[in-house]
Length: 639
Ligand code: MSP
Image 1 (tube, rainbow, N blue to C red):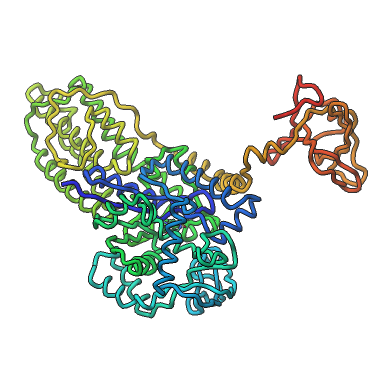
Image 2: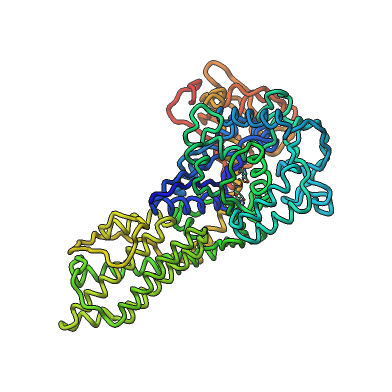
């Protein structure tokens, strides 16, 4: 029977491009969603972007952009990363979407009306970075934020509060009555003791900044970003909107709903969100799956710690499947996983090249050589076949169970047990000696058939994470199904012809790859930041007036070694321009060049000399070169 599933990943916080750590939730959830789809469950996978709050307001300001323009840029980048990582979401919600905003506002008003939200005043230690107030006992000893370690500041303001205390006992009872509400068990225990220690009412509005959803009845307040963000799970389905069919189908009808989250945002999902739903009289029909963190060499990987690895460093060079593979393979449910470049290379070489890639290429070339690429249908079993067949059945059952329970790492490990078992089977059956004996051709056929079956089955089992590779292999096998439904040994190939297989994974040279990674750490991370801050619109760019000019005269600045002072003819006009290029050009080398000048720059006095414009140069950190043109006339516009 077709089950329905609603799978969500936390909406990504729009403060910068996703790094590998916060890509984990999205990749893991994608693997989970694909597994359900391939099991014939009607699956709706929701992701999106969390775009409000003080931190974003500040980031936008730093970048010289309006907050909306800033988040539009980040949304485009995040979507590009998700596309490159083969994330198969069904809907991408943004908390600046009009429908979402309206739903949040209506929820707030309703809770206000029924007195679950009330107006009070707040004074406490607030972490801008985490958008969270902390009580004294929660803060680090030095008063810094317990989550990110940054300084907090005391904020006092009139604010609305959500009555968490009213729902505390009901929530505790719910958690106790539903043992699988929070997975894994350790996280559930954390939540229970947090609730048992007593819930203070939650401050759910802010007046100290503007970039948020205004409270309808009191617009000087904006809704607390977590109340805003958590609502996405139902606003995306159309809750309180004209078209709420999806909400009826995926929330009210009690389908399997999974919120996949990182452990750092457990409290918001296991306490605030259920209480919001209780207050709204909506069913709590979801399961919470809290995964650990991807750790870098010095702790949790995050942009603010400066240890972030960006997914494109990896997928640009090794393909998205290797990144997806690494993430699911290295993260045990309930624990943290480690990312390091050498470990990444090791997994790539050992698991993808040696185990899987070799099994596929050896088998394809043997079937080609011994049977002209036709999978033999008739065969006589060898002494090793039964054991392999049992292993296949065991692995299929265990992988299904592991996926269902979100033990993604176990799903990978079981699949690799089968792959390694098949490589061993080649050594046991020694097809290269069977081929020499005419009387054992039927056994050789059996070996080929069994190997092809292992490849088909292992490839389907791995297809939720090896998205591209599995397609290549299943196409080459001439099998066009990756379904988990009725997956079992014994496919009827009926003299089925294999297609040529492309090479799957190239062995990596460890020292060469480590050298590549070391250049990334120094330069690419920095570029990434600069890229984000410097993004401008075409309208902004068109404000800059660029023209071709000819350098008529040039001399050294009298009071500054690094500066040259030039007279440059631009059309009919001659301007004096000061440039910081004396280290790279002698004045006489500069004369006669046709350069590009920014002509609408405000005049400036540089070390006592007036400068009216700027000459464009290219600089790579070591060298500097003036940008010149050959044929364009002085005064020509540059676009
Ligand atoms: N915007 C909130 C979520 C709101 S959901 C109603 C948020 N966004 S986030 O971008 O900071 O994090 C997105 C996801 O990445 C979260 O599940 C978070 O736990 C996860 N991770 C962030 N850094 C991580 C690692 N280093 N490792 C694994 N996951 C981590 O939180």
